[in-house]
Image 1: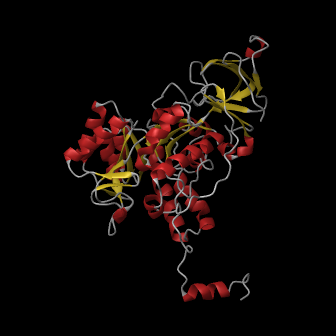
Image 2: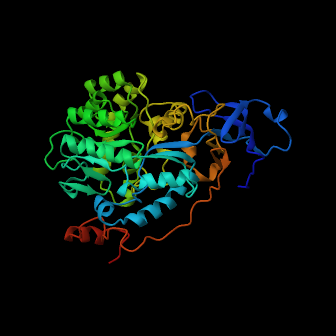
Image 3: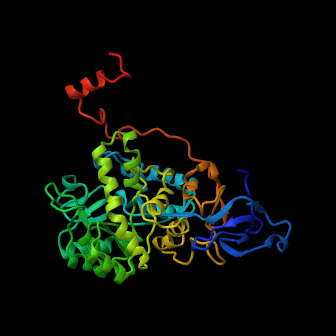
Length: 455
């Protein structure tokens, strides 16, 4: 890809097929950028713009808004387990590595993302470094430490009864809740995240157990909203999704296993939902490649299947569905899967490709606090644009083919999208393990008897 400079901040993208991110059918148009904004989207602009204005020839290409990922974990660095995440990370090194990893998002066509929660709250510092031009990366909003009860969220006994560990902080009383919400807002978070559900060893329900009361959740919302800060909840289960909507949550992650009461609550409140099925879809489809058992693969596929109908009903009733990928784990590495949620929305939820693109662009601008400011190709929007070889309005999977990505434009500036160099892991960064199975005698017998193995 050749470099494209600008003349006094002016750039013309000429001859492309514009997918505007608002759900409209593709149309041939020129896109004129002035400074950080889109100045015009019209046909034949090339005949009305000065000849010395720099141009990108987009004939045969798709011009569309940059992808926005509404559920990412930029500080995690792709752990295989909570043990690795909680006990094999160092704060300063995690911040440095996150600054490198964020460039992988930009090189994949991601021009904005929401970091739902972070180790040591380094998301706040990374966001500020990006905004100050110290680190090159997409637009970013961030939570701090997720609020947990001592039940421990999805990490169970790895979470202490008091204090902080990894991405979470344990709160017990109403005073704890108010104090922690105010502290996080003081340090500069964009969102307060609550881990509304978790896993317990002997639970009897499908999904996860609700570990916050409705009154506690209302207290979080009241405290945060008084200080102008939105609240997002991790909710895997019907009652948690219902109560998050009733409590006043501004966005819900997952919202799986909804029943009629939960559906009614989210429809009534129009709470945006980020299903985040990329993690489950990757495990279901490709888990065997990384040693996941067949049982685990079927379990995660079932979560998609069991939840898809209700999520589609919510969407049809006007609830915004947003695309998030949970990038940051070993099964969802940075830069590889930011398109995948669109594919799930089309194949499993029944959205059209244009509806899925909207969910990953203009609708997702809400997670950045930039609704109506970015995420669309229209005049006066921020110029966050990608140019792709292929008709993404027919096949959203093309967004995952890095070889098709021609240009990424962020804030009106053409980015260098050369992927960062492959790096090594620092000492002690990964949890050591011998393999994915226990070496029982029957495992050896099975191995000895495979045709490919000659003992």
